[in-house]
Image (cartoon, rainbow, N blue to C red; front, side, top):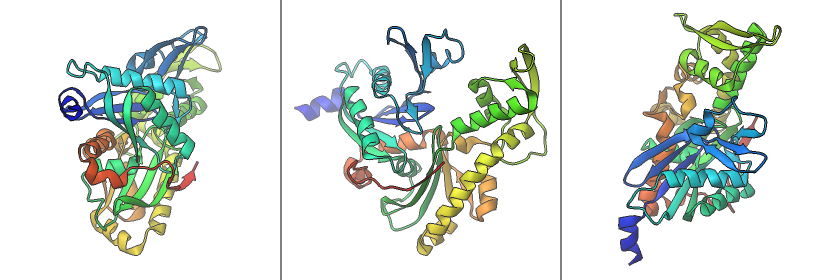
Length: 353
């Protein structure tokens, strides 16, 4: 009887619970939510005022008693109660008239490589508190590889670079598990911070994070470009204290991001050095796969390929690869149950700052 009810009324849910953005995949419907992982809280009353895109619009525009914050830092929970509320918000938004029970029988969430038992348990408990009956965890590079439809369960090397908002995951996967991995706390958010820092130092202009992100997306690149592109940015001159507009170029953004990209490339090279020769032979034939929002930075695939002498491919729709893979795991749980993360047996890659 329960199976019949589940078939008609309940839907499994996969969640990419990212530091910057969260995506929700519902079985049978695909990716239905892609919103910022941000919450606005009234510090006087403790009341949550807004979440997701609505809360993001409040960034830099609130009185002192309203805090707009991201409850996840580097892909793990920093504020348990707010994370639970955020998950409830996403699951509620995913409801349909068919799912009137508001119960989600199975929920799967992606986590960075090497999270601790405590961090994994915090995510699991938050998802259960948000309405999940059964909660599974999977490492993000593994889910991304499945979303790319790579044959990770076979004896062959699959090299993944997943650049999200809070972390960059570099991993070699074979036989359904991670053989070598690196986890860096350098990703989209740090890119934005470096753009802010560079513009502050060069132009004496204080700009917001959303402005920095827009500049990164519109004119940013990982390599110097022959064609010069520019865009105006507005902020406050910290010398005069007055509002000001300056024009920044793609070369400015390149200079801001280059040191961070060098760290990512160093981690890729280190991972290659630690990869067993037979698997490395497979990687040289098949190439390296680049996913996550950071994969969209212009020229990043070319730069990594030049540095490591291996072809690098940006996967189709890199922003949704991880959540699509998590959804595929739920749809074929018996086939993929071996890739699920056991919080009592975590893999521990090298963490790099």
